[in-house]
Length: 120
Ligand SMILES: [Zn+2]
Ligand SMILES: [Zn+2]
Image (cartoon, rainbow, N blue to C red; front, side, top):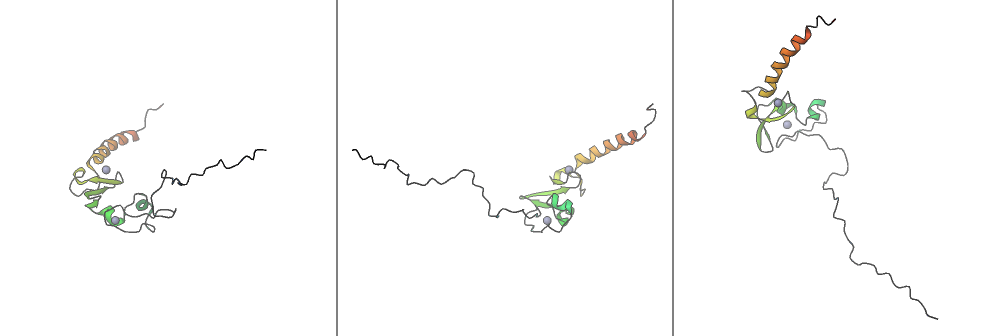
């Protein structure tokens, strides 16, 4: 009789640590609290208007003529609801030049569009 030794399983001593799909983040799986995206601004937008929370901008910086965002001087465009470089604006306007130009065109268009006549 041959006694078959069932010792054929070798377990790898080195436990492979999964390095893939590691999500960095100290936040323990939760909703990120909305905060202003301006540099150094820690305003909690939880109680702010929906508009401010959506665009991550506090009321103060939404109206400021110069806001430092990621180290650059920018201004919040009320038309685009986002930050542009100061060069995109005229003087202290809060709408970028491009939008203002488009605005005028659209205005002209819509005004003529109001005259709905002879659609028979
Ligand atoms: Zn702010
Ligand atoms: Zn704009």
